[in-house]
Image 1 (cartoon, rainbow, N blue to C red):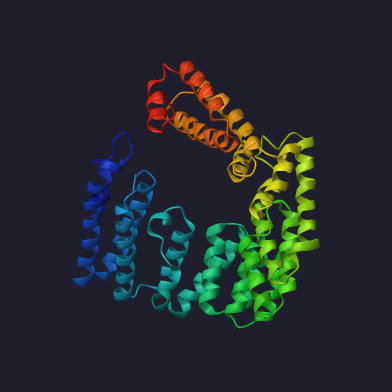
Image 2: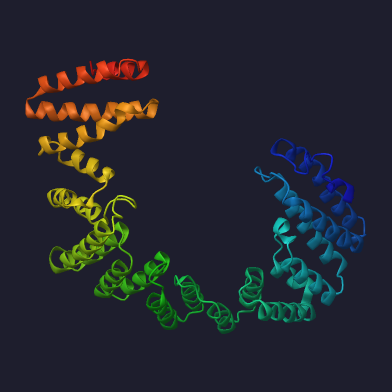
Length: 410
């Protein structure tokens, strides 16, 4: 049966490529059928051992297969199911079964099969489960930050309903984003302990590191509970603190939405938020980061507010990048065509030296915008002369000329 899992006939250069994975999967699937036949014919004990060998064999090969279609993953799941069915039929020694399961689950070969320990509860019984708990607890103590160890520990404790023990596992390795605090809060809420749940979530907000936290899901969790408790002012406070720690358009938008529900946005709240963003913009300009890392959040926030004149002034003050300048030109073209035209002409210039359809498409879009500005200003003759000069300069770019013709830019 193990010969059915031998990859050598399908592996070129030691690797099973996508084109060969399906054929290998068809062959490997026969191993699943063979295992089920063993169990059905009264040889379940043999099927237990054979399925373990099969899973080990496939686990060693799995990392060297392009399984984009999931064919081999299906085979791996089939091997795991065949093993469980064989165990249920054969009833092997529960302690030894626990030894094998924990060793397999903590090893590198489980990536393919992804066995769930709790599926074996009826096979292990109390003796096997006790042995599994002992082994998993020992492994977790040795390596409390290990993903597999922690996951298994959580799995066992959750299946037993040991909420406080599960929380202790989470609390031993708290994430600086507050994500672990959120897991604890969710466990407590499921256990019917909402007050403790909210305490842990609020603690997560306080303890989240300034560089990476708080996790947006944690923020949403806390704010939802505040709203349920009719505490909208506290929602505003949470979002205000998030903006202080993380200057982003999303944080600004969330604060604006929260503050509007309390009628506190169009006043000191908005002014204070914009002052924070302006201070950041000033710092970026001084360190010359504004164009390297994108334009200032201040400009995006003002655009998002619909305060285009203030956004334009912020751009004039040096806070905007090219994307923001063009957005402002598009928004203000009807009211301030002369200013918008200046932006479009500035952005057209670099495209004179670029080639390729994407560059030609962008140049065409900018020229159409510039023409709209000239029409609004009543200076179409100037645009006609400008376009004639540009076409003469770019006449060797035949695809560009054809594109301009299609858009009436003659």
